[in-house]
Length: 182
Image (cartoon, rainbow, N blue to C red; front, side, top):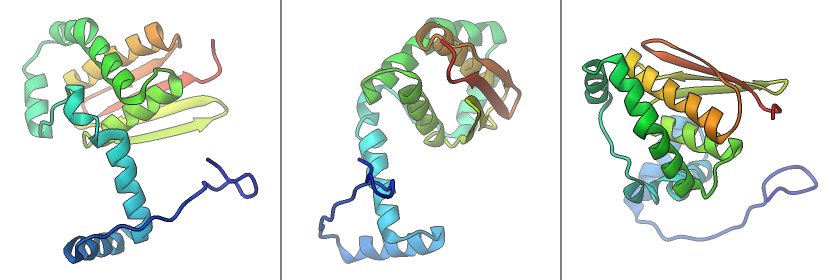
């Protein structure tokens, strides 16, 4: 909820008892990240509520980037596209719906960017005049990028009913679309 006067989020105060070791680690981490302990705790709780609580039930698994990259390197492009088309899109749709409760442009983008960040994929999402330009720096190889590109094309076309332009290479994926199109 936003405060109507100054546009800031409404906050409340709550007290927790934490062990000294946890408090010391929070304070040390907040110094390293150059944010307040309050900001760090808010970020951690938001991540827990938005992501971590759903992860064990979502069907997602954790792999290291080198393992995932090697798996995708061994696949041929035709199989990657079939996998993305026949299973990937449906799985992504189901997991996003489960974790967000709905799938529209805003909820999907929020979920997808969170998934990428939690997968060690750096994201940049800029909006200029209603044109979204999202770049994913993945370093997972061309086939992983092809897999994501294929899924995103299907999600944007079949679920979000939007045209999307995608470019990809071994390290990056670029997604461009217009917000206000029908």
